[in-house]
Amino acid sequence: MTVRRRAIRAAGARFAVGVIWALVAAACASINSQTNSFATLEDARQAGAVANGWVPSWLPPGSQDIREAHVPGTTAMWGLANFPQSESDVLRAALLPDEVPLDGLRPGIPGRIEWWPLELRGPLNGERLGVVGIHAYRARQGDLLVAVNWKQGRTYYWSTR
Image 1 (cartoon, one colour):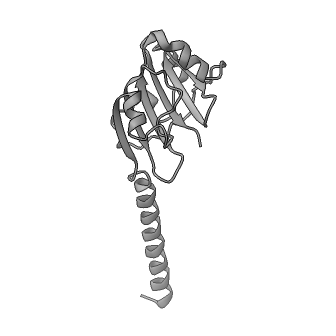
Image 2 (image 1 turned 90 degrees about the horizontal axis):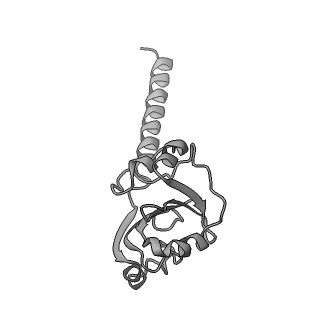
Image 3 (image 1 turned 90 degrees about the vertical axis):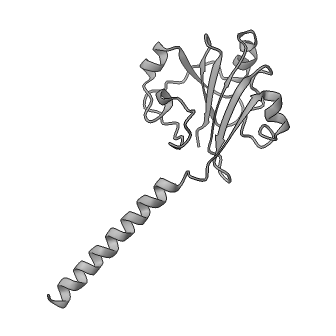
């Protein structure tokens, strides 16, 4: 084997190793995400999740079964909560009135967050989500997109930057 061929093979091997490391780093980027669950909004407040910005302060006061995930040191966050239908107006007041189309959006939630619904992973299908009663809005505070099923009293939120 000539010196030139060895050099080309070595460069190819270094390139392949570099690509593999880049893929591993990208796959592991969200491994440091943290999750929390709270029975009530008051529990989330007491635990500091509202003060830290992981759970929105504008959720209806009777919100329950709250789950949140965030990546420390970033603005990346996702969450869901059930709210009493009697407090729908509180949630509506926290959202901009115009619906946001969901087609093609990607919430970007890490795969290891098992409680996030499959319908809200990957590129979203707005028509399909609309059929099951999901409507999306921007929050008045923060860079959050909020998907709501008004009939079920369930909301999902995620950061957009």
